[in-house]
Image (tube, rainbow, N blue to C red):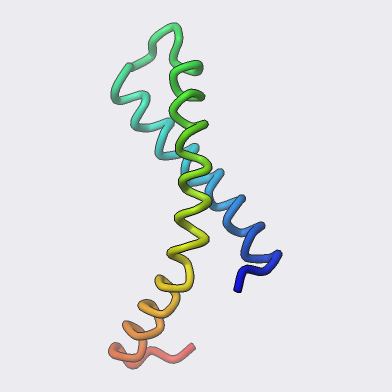
Length: 77
């Protein structure tokens, strides 16, 4: 079930990750072009909602996988 802290986490993490990744990949792709920020914003405006949806979907699975890996490594919380 999705709760408010989970949604807020997804919004913040999605913002940070999508901004960072699209900034880096846009810079690699177009360099320091005059229209860099408009190109970056266009790419980011697609990536941000996708990132939020992916975080909401994948977070429970990633948590379970992490727990299982830690159990196999016998690491305590």
